Length: 344
Image 1: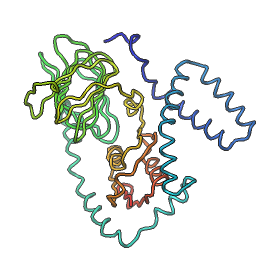
Image 2 (image 1 turned 45 degrees about the horizontal axis):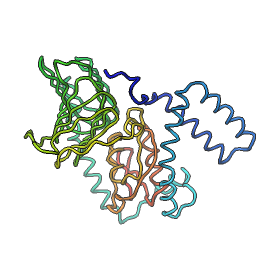
Image 3 (image 1 turned 90 degrees about the vertical axis):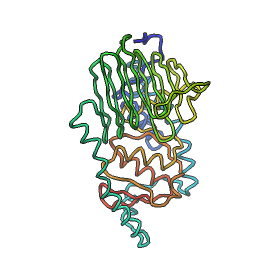
Image 4 (image 1 turned 135 degrees about the horizontal axis):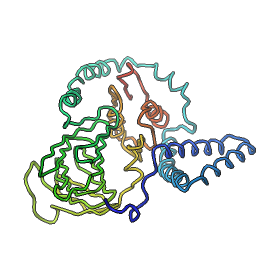
């Protein structure tokens, strides 16, 4: 492995990040509503916690960084929707109970869609019978491979492992995966995607694959990114690229993109149980939260898809995301059941 002392600081632990989020919330709420005496006591307690360890201060700085990026677009969107104050949960629940007759046909179509979701069970069933087939259904899956490599699959992700005496190969079918690769100079570690291969000896990196592109983000070590489509090799300026720690690039039908610095906090958030959205189209947000939801969430009105969503949320509390969407956007939530949720 690359000497970590020469790298950027490691992301703080999930537990410490959660503590920092709680402190950030307390301090923010105290500034908004508490008396001066309560504010003073809370600030003293907070400063004591932050002084306990440099990691505490670093965790709080990560939370502040995210909040600073996200608070402004959320506030702006709320103003555009004509709401100066956030909706209370009581108001949200009342609105959810109202269904206009004109939506009945759309809801019926949604129910038919829901009945047809059974085909998505195929990856889960495959994983029961084949240890080399990995599928994370609605939560993060962590596995240690036979060579000592650790692999984490984000919710809704699918991959397969093919190791032999000469090669180590992982095929990423869909989703997002993080690798902490065990060093083996005799057997390079290759991740195959629909737009090309990522090759490493010993390193840690993140790969996210969607319909249009594959994003490779390197946390430590070095990897070679090689473009190929449908198994065919490629030659030319856009065919390959070498990344060093802290760099990211894309693979697409056009080839390999340029190397850029990436946001380590946002890229590692899912491994801490967090969802980070920054001016993200609602359609993309729905795709993400559906991977963590044992059911189906959909926007009935296509005009909603381009609305922007910003925020930091927990992956184990999808209701929080839905409440935030309804509280800041001109969107109404209708729950047909715990499994079928409509945005109208």
